[in-house]
Length: 71
Image 1 (cartoon, rainbow, N blue to C red):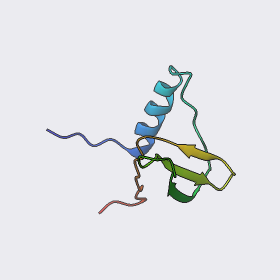
Image 2 (tube, rainbow, N blue to C red; image 1 turned 90 degrees about the vertical axis):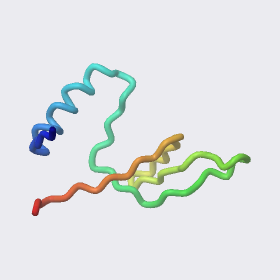
Image 3 (spheres, rainbow, N blue to C red; image 1 turned 135 degrees about the vertical axis):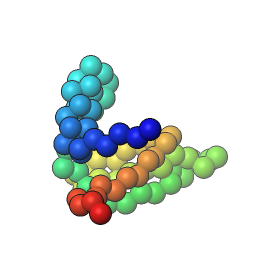
Image 4 (cartoon, rainbow, N blue to C red; image 1 turned 90 degrees about the horizontal axis):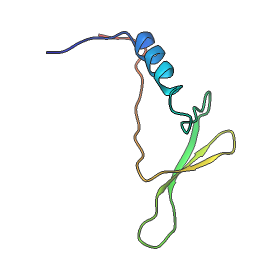
């Protein structure tokens, strides 16, 4: 069984739900400039460089692309 949800409704629900988790910080209108691997011994974590000067390090990095139109 599958369910189709409009992107706007999904975003609205997610943003409403995130308000319940204070440690979550939402970055709005920031673009990824580059992704590099940290130079720590043992591989290190991915480092995401944003266009606003911020650098984020995370053990898990997930990429997604939104499509503006459907087939």
